[in-house]
Image (tube, rainbow, N blue to C red; front, side):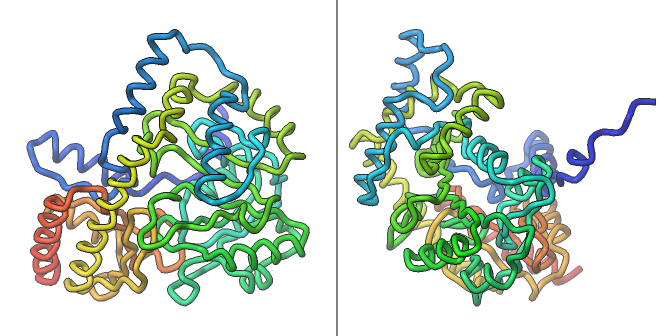
Amino acid sequence: MAQPYSARSRAIEPFHVMALLARANELQAAGHDVIHLEIGEPDFTTAAPIVAAGQAALAAGHTHYTAARGLPALREAIAGFYQQRYGVAVDPQRILVTPGGSGALLLTSSLLVDPGKHWLLADPGYPCNRHFLRLVEGEAKLVPVGPNERYQLTAPLVAEHWDEHSVGALVASPANPTGTLLARHELAELSAAVKTRQGHLVVDEIYHGLTYGQDAASVLEVDDQAFVLNSFSKYFGMTGWRLGWMVAPSEAVGELEKLAQNLYISASSMAQHAALACFEPATLAILETRREAFRQRRDFLLPALRELGFSIALEPEGAFYLYADISAFSDDAFAFCRHFLEVEHVAFTPGLDFGRHGAGHHVRFAYTQSLPRLHEAVERIARGLRRWSGQ
């Protein structure tokens, strides 16, 4: 009899939403109109200038490996973007282009976490963060956070939960699933709290650009030694191209490059050439128009859900999610989500996918559909709540 699969594989949990997505696809195949509010993917296709750059790269034969750190021209363009958007000078040599933001997380966790060591993570938070740590035989120490902390790790929480096995903290701003931001002074306080304990601060800035009414501060404005994870997927709308980047301290680049060479050789060469068009003024104008569309969607869906009885404690400042407390209706988020999928054909995500703290009575809505579709979704949810309460 074959040996069982590895303990690390068995410890990594599936996305609960994937079971709902599979069922949603079955319903669609049967002819039902499903409104998808469950997946964290912009509904817009990749902007035309980026697509054109990718097509030109293919036509020119740019189909070979690049250097493990990425195209020099793309790393220089990313550095220029930091200077333009944040007023921060970043040496292009400190930038590594990766296969999606996930590639950046894989490199960072491989570099910084030994077996039995852990990072502090906010609970709720993006689930793959803790799963990457498990993959490298490390751990995630989940710190329960709520509206009082704006669903974010804070310097006092770092001080409270840090122990002899802690080697770092990972925060996200804007955060998934809550959309909250860390202000510049909060990033500085976190940096000081982690540095005092000889740890590393890792900041997920994947939703930068998708903020409303204010711009997100980069941790590089206050901490040149932080590890920054970013992606072309969200603001730049290149989800399927699988391209991201990270900024690392100079002394870490050699080790990270070695890991990249061994783990994936290089990011997609065609995607890298396409991404060069991301920073052109015409492309940025398209992306800013889309950011405004997301703001309009948030400004419709947030009050509409509150009016139906969902408790959403904080207005999200970024990303494209609403994290809603369903305690008024249920303490079984998965059953609640299943009901709306089966009865009203509206799909959204149970809190179980984002951690353990309050997971049973929270759900996440992604406002990644057009305003007319969101209006229809709200009508269906209102009808579904009447049916739910009548069960």
